[in-house]
Image (cartoon, rainbow, N blue to C red; front, side):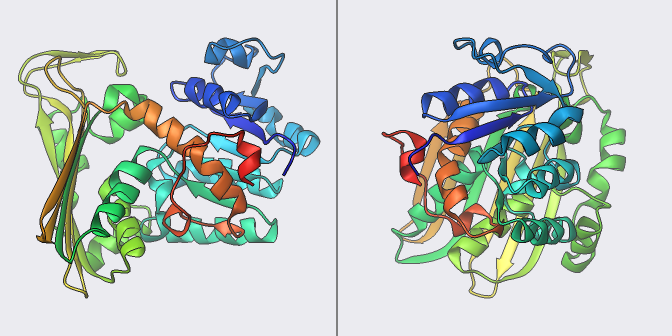
Length: 357
């Protein structure tokens, strides 16, 4: 491919500003952008990203159909919400116009074990229109590819134990609310904790029906098992509230979380497999206090044991960079909803993006 990759940014919030700049600096041309926020509609994307003005203005979402039909871009980047129920319309929009699309939404990374009906519908639509849909971001690398790579250095693998802590303040109100931030403990237990420890078949049915949105590690363990060639026999999850030790103000929620109320959650998912490998993974998403930072820790237990820890990762920037680096593999992949464990590992792009196609 000798021409520039032509990209469309769908969602111009906290992540959009990095995504636009990273796309431009890797040689892609951002030809359109969409948002629902009146405060950014009409702004030049260069103003959003802190780069040179381009003449490309952020458009209202209702203009997307007409614009995509006219421009016929190569790829759409979706940076809005987290769940497949929320992302389905955006993915469908791009697929109808035969445009490859990739999302920062956490569930989008491996939705086959959480939203199979939506994913199957999108898979069919993408195949009919010869395009590829996927999700990527920080979990793709730091909860997925990194662990798979370390496992490749082991003689024997018995257990994978992981924990990732992140600040919900960095990702917008939808994610903070989904983690229970701002609730009382009783509200948390009624709305989120009431699904703890349900049998695998029961919780799977509730998740697949859309009654309950699982913690991120539910889908992540599915990604890891698929990548490692493991067969899931059972999977349970437990969500525990993270309690404020003092009054804590949330800029995202625009409120003070009172001492004794909920800053977020710890969600543990335990997966057993037919091959005898156990996955015990935890995500801790909450409003971090001044003495806390993002952290990513993993242990691989077997022969030999090994571990890795990443302290204070720039999760927002790494999410955006990892997604942008995935775009050549996305475009090169077979049509359908193709999850990233089926793609080659990312490489650092020393040349313009189009030279990797």
